[in-house]
Amino acid sequence: MSADDTGATSEALLTRILSSLDEDKAEDVVQIDLRGKTSIGDYMVICSGRSSRQVNAIAEKLVERLKSEFGRGAKVEGKETGDWVLIDTGDVIVHVFRPEVREFYQLEKMWLPAGTA
Image (cartoon, rainbow, N blue to C red; front, side, top):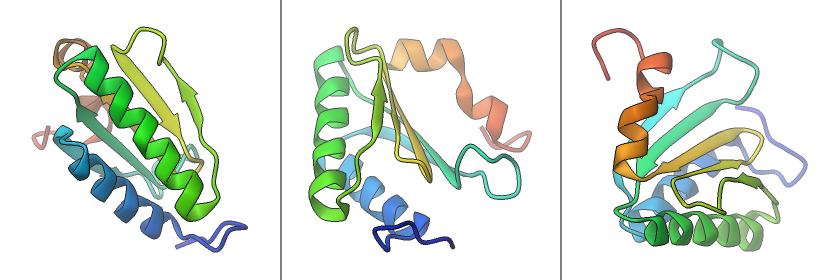
């Protein structure tokens, strides 16, 4: 449970990210605990939006909320196409997919224990 320079723990960030995704009607939200598995972050969150427009809206609102509530910027990649947007907050990595793209890449299968994805 590390706190960053804003005082936010990765758990506090994760909680807010999950509530933001819920507010914006993200679908099939999966959270993966990365602690002890990799140094890229403490958690990964994978979710879907129904369209490119919704994927972008979910990502934009999430970044805005984290900035206003935690004073924390995030690196964002993939907004140009809206098929797969990656939001890297440092402690929590969020992937927002269109369903077809999520099915193609199957990130959950790489990170979840066998039989849980």
